[in-house]
Image (cartoon, rainbow, N blue to C red; front, side, top):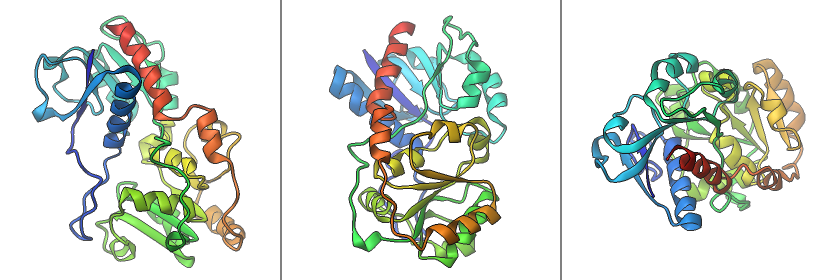
Length: 306
C-alpha cells in the first residue's frame, strides 16, 4: 500500500526566516510528517507528501487530502479528505460543498463530526472522528532558563479579533510572542519565527502558554495542534473556549477563558506563582492523543475503504 498526503500550500515551512521575511508555520505539514513517520515505522507503509501541482498520477493507492478543493480525483485509486482545517465560509458549508468528492472522510472537529457522523460517502462509508494530535517524540519536557517567560504565544495573525482580546492582557507580564505577524503593533512585539527545538523549550519552560483557535475551529470544536504540543511538554495552556473543550480536557491541567476581562483577572492570580506542576504529558499519552495512535485509527479506516 502506498499513501500520499496532499497539501494545498508549500512544504518545508518549519525552518525560520529572519523577522520581516518570515512565513507561516503550516500546521498541516506537522500532521502529514507525523502520520508518514508512524505508518512507515509501524507498518512499513510508504508515504509521500506533495503539494497539488507535484502530485504524481497512478502511483498511490490512497490520497489523503489535507485541504479541500484540490484535484485528488486524478491521482489515486481512493481519495480521503482529512477535514482538519477551519474554513472562512464555515465548516458546514465547506462540508456540504465538498464531501461528495471523497471515498472517505476523517473529521477533526468534534461538533462537525456530531453533525455529519451518519453521512455516507461515495464509496458507502461513514466519516470517522479523528482529531489532530501531537508527536510525543518531538514534543517532550525540556526546561531551559533562557525561555522561562510568564506567558508565551507562538502563532500568526489569522485569528481575527481574538488576537487582541487574548494577547493584550499578556503585555503586562514577561510575555514572549513568536511567529509571523503583519500587523505593525504585533510585529514590533514579536520575536519573529522560532525553531522547532526552541519551541519545545518555550512550551516546557514558560509558566503558561496562550492558545487561540481560528473562529471556525472554535465553533466546531477543532482543537489546535498547539494545545496538544504544549501539553506533551508538560506545559499548561490558557485557551479560549472551543466547543466541547472543557469536557475534552477533563483530567488535565488547563485554564479556559471567555473574554478579555476574565483573562486579565485570571492572570493577576496566576502569574505571581511559579510554573505549575502537572501531569499533562501523561494525560496525553494515557488518552492516546498521539500521532502514533491516530495513525492506527487512520490505517484501519483506509483498509476498510480499499
